[in-house]
Image 1: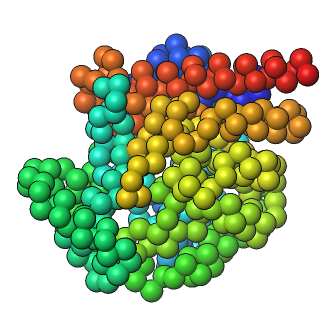
Image 2 (image 1 turned 180 degrees about the vertical axis):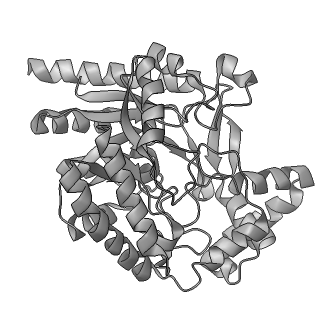
Length: 391
């Protein structure tokens, strides 16, 4: 098998144990030091502790996801030198433990945004949903960001406001809480006021300024990563469009080409997330894999189903709009040509079966939905690989 099958694990506090990942057939673990404050150095001691837990379970730490990029770096703040130096020191410490694939993102403020974490799909399982009307209503009725109404089609704003008024106050609060969820691996929420303060940091940050700050980061980090033999993999924006007035710069094929060539290095690569890129209908996923080729160092394989009004939900891995057969066909061909194995993980599985009654797992990261996803993807890969070997 060309893909290294991996499983995301949020550390000792994860409700899904490492033994479940092993039983699901994973080879490697995708993990991070979620207890280390954003911007602080990941010490060799802390990395070694986590690595030991993973190896005791008969697995290996395949990918770090993520070493977060501090907001001072994204905004070009006065403390960015300190935080980029801390970042580089963390990379050195990871390399000393022979952990050589690092995923990160350059999304301002929020890591991902959804409006519902328990959307009931047709088969009775629960999925993550981005309801565009609820997002617009939050912007205009709750956050009340100046000028936000002008960023949407008037008909959608009217629909969103009408729908918001029908909701109970409990429903409105639940949507608000979901949008303001903290980063994956945490249980911390933001208040509306805290969120406004964080958005204010980007008041004068245009798309071009964010790109400039990203290039500064790459020029500092990538040469160090290359010297250490580390493959950096940037995760695309989720959703791949400007939200809350914040610029997004890793949303399209053109963005991916730009970032991978602006600092040309084998260490400057891409985490190809079919769910994030697939949340835009104008992103041609199989074609992107074909054309981006050597720049892909990590795969997140999932599919979204597009709905009306610009909404989408997380579909089962082989369903939705991604056309996973064509995606996997291009992945297998690419890796045969490159003669390498690259880590892949199933992403955002549905909450289903016995997991329906469990409330302490992270949204999208319950066990059984990901077990199903990994099994389906493994079977699809094996079928395509064996067929190609016979041709």
